[in-house]
Length: 83
Image (cartoon, rainbow, N blue to C red; front, top):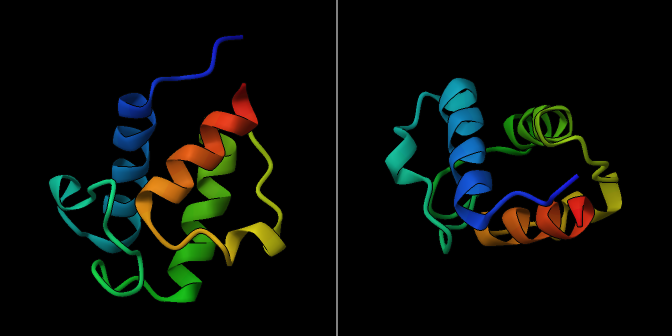
């Protein structure tokens, strides 16, 4: 099972963020911070992470979630978890 490309994962994350928060998908860019730039609170972030686990078939433990500050962090984490 091949790991997905950075772009595919980014698009998937953008969809989840859009569904959870109503933010436009194009606002979800690699170097944006979830809290500072996208204004996503920890409750929404938890929900997004849970949905990302299902969507991408990966496990993201709570102790890792708190280190995922930017969209890039999450994309990279998922790529490695899939690899």
